[in-house]
Image (cartoon, rainbow, N blue to C red; front, side, top):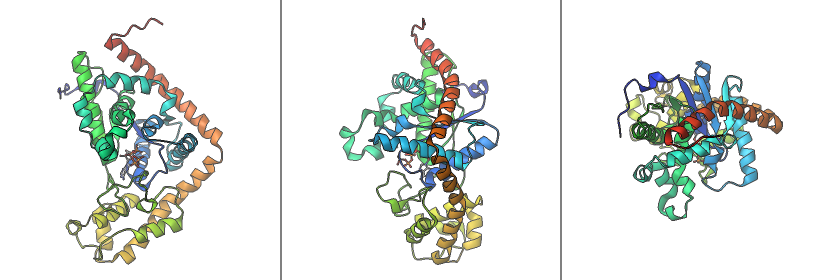
Length: 346
Ligand code: AQP
């Protein structure tokens, strides 16, 4: 792709944008790979904009009532996990129409060849590409629109979304190059911590996902203590005890996954987990992991239930967030249209 000037991002203020699809129960993967880190970034004092990407969610079928409930539940999860709507902008995507408009503009910048290379598209469409929605194919350009609409410079995501942020950089670079401007920054993916790719509890080669048909494959943020303990107890592992060194996890995807999850939940390194549990069997490690997960997730799910008892208050918070988001997005959309040659006479 066209190179961007080295000092391009220096022109833009530091701003974080990220999102989560309200397409089902949020999982431990969403929590460790995204939500927990969203809170950390907010608490570091960086300007943070977080979006429940409902327009992305409908790229696969969503029952309308379920989508509304899931969107409120996801908002409750954000707030219960520590997102403060007074310090971060929190809103649902469809309330800011500029996302869809910018998505169209960027559809006209992105190239089919780039889109065809997206591994999430290939994974989700599988052998059934003909039957997928056009929206699923265009998912990554809408994500680029989400990010560039705010001139965001950093995007905290899990490992699976890295390619989409790289595509966003390519789209920004092509736009800047074609229109001879330095208008869009080159946003950087922030992929940090021990749990950037939490794996399924049933298959160590697949990522934990809220749309996996097997509920046993994931820990949901709303699972109760008994369910969490049972799912970890039944998690697929090999029969060996944990190794004495990190290198000993080589070729042991399931064991590595559980060590990484423990490290991320406890805010320690995988080395420290091995120092504590090396040589011990899963009969000891799994209950310790379950206790740790319950101690972190239970207060969040209790607070989520409290928030969900007042859906009107959640809607109010999302409405205020949408107004704040719109105020940033509209001038950037207007300038984009202007650069592209659209008449703006009202
Ligand atoms: N297993 C995971 N480990 C670490 N991070 C993860 N994320 C998702 N799964 C894991 C991160 O969570 C953020 C929001 O993801 P999303 O809901 O927008 O879509 P996704 O990546 O496709 O997540 P799911 O759970 O697999 O959703 P479905 O099943 O609906 O497609 C992103 O930052 C993602 O990296």
